[in-house]
Each structure stands twice: as C-alpha cells, then as structure tokens.
Amino acid sequence: MSNLDIAEKIIEGFYVDKSAFIVVSSRNKLSIKGSPSNKVFSKEALSKIDLNINFIDSENSVVFLGKNLKGSATITVRGSDSFIYIGNDCTFKKLIIDSNQKSDFVAIGNHVTTNFNCAFRSGLRATKYEIDSYE
Image (tube, rainbow, N blue to C red; front, side, top):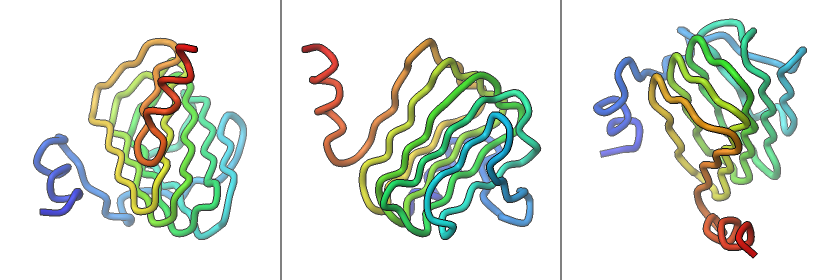
C-alpha cells in the first residue's frame, strides 16, 4: 500500500487531484524559493497564513495546502520527489516542517493546531536537530 493510499484512509477528505487545486506562487506573506520544477498547490487563495516554502537541492517535489490555513509556518524540502500535504482548517504558530530526504512523505491532517515553535522533522539527520537543541 502506498503512502497516498494510507493517507486517503486516515485523513478525512484527503485527495491530491491537481485539477481541484490552484497553483500558488510567491506573493505577500507567501515566499516560495527553489527550482521551478517544484510546485505548490492550494485549495484556495492563502490570505490568513504567513508561509515560507524553501526547496533546497530539490526537484519535482510538491506541497499541497488545504483550506482555511492560519498562522505562520516554514516548510523546507531538501530532497527531490518529496510530497508534503497539509489538510484543512489548521492553525500554526511558527510551525517548522523540515523534510530531509529524497522521496519523503509528510502529511498533516485536518484541524491541526500547533503551539509556538513546533517542529516536524523527517528523514536524514532528523534526530540530530533535536539533540542539538538541548545542548
């Protein structure tokens, strides 16, 4: 079973049909950096979230964003062919999503709220950051 199949079973309303999303580009409160082969899709115009997306040494990765996202977040993708999904009605307070490997898969469901400086890290060296933060 693929990661997408699993996500469809556990995240209500999960789907990634690109025709149901709009392609997003940098604008006020939204910064997207990296190769144009990486794409960001959203279910609606992003007006309530301050979002920085950095594709570092990444090609052909995608980020899907749900409706009614609020707060602030930074997403960093360091591996090609990676997939990040954020569901609907989420509120983030300085959330960090750090994807550190090729073909990574990170999914956040609907109605998720985070506290200040919450970090989701996956892939290569993910635990190193946690250890360093306590030194």
